Image (tube, rainbow, N blue to C red; front, side, top):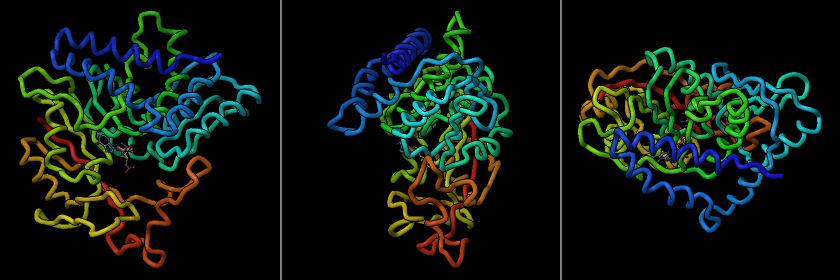
Length: 353
Ligand SMILES: Nc1ncnc2c1ncn2[C@@H]1O[C@H](C[S@+](CC[C@H]([NH3+])C(=O)[O-])CC(=O)[O-])[C@@H](O)[C@H]1O
């Protein structure tokens, strides 16, 4: 018997946007686009693996979930698995490899399935979260949310609603696989449908495709996160404007991106690849990035964290078996990438619209 995880998730997403449209007309434009966004991701001409991913999610077993802990570093689904369930879930989740952002754990005790992701996304969350003030009661957008790990943490921190966007077909299905278990818990405990599964949504779309409005009071989000995306964009100013357009006046932007040492005029544009990635464009200094944010109209810009990524935070695991950070650094000098650029250093900036 297959489950209807994705169908249910999509229905909850429609309902959430219909509710918001009563007060924010911009939500009707999101609703108008939603059928296209959601059917594109199922189109096997665009995404050859989509049917296989869908079948992995829909074949996950229904479990008796006792609790879902969104506030622990390992996002944990509290349930007891039999050995057979462990094997079944492991096999289905492995069909959704590579798992980059996490960690997640399904089950506790001997038969747990621990998804040891390439990234310790919990470390990033622990660097960022202390600087957010509160997310309690806020509408939050997570741009480029990957598997949804940080989105779940935002919901755990009390956000009223989280919408994750990311154009990746694989990461969309990874989110749905985790949501399958979270919603299993909500279904048992939450009659009025305010549980975390109902507050956390995913739209498989890029930021530039979202409708936006310049009308005062017609934006949907109190907080917008954009972590690990800006350096992938060819037009950083356009991207920063698009982020700003999603925020209410007074709303908070949380921007995390690769930076380099330097003054307000320093920006590195890697000539070819950066750390073997062929889609990296602008790496500003913190001072330059602060100036960019001010130029697009943000105020009160603060850098709250700077961190050099370690090979303990980003590494190959059983759930991501390709190359990882250690293969992207100069073997004789880990302060440099294999191409001779400064090794990855990330800054988190917080700014107000
Ligand atoms: N135009 C776009 N709009 C939205 N998402 C995009 C776009 N282009 C790429 N992405 C998505 O942005 C994510 C970037 S990873 C950061 C994940 C998480 N936030 C993290 O902070 O760990 C990068 C990293 O690992 O450094 C990917 O999931 C892309 O599909």
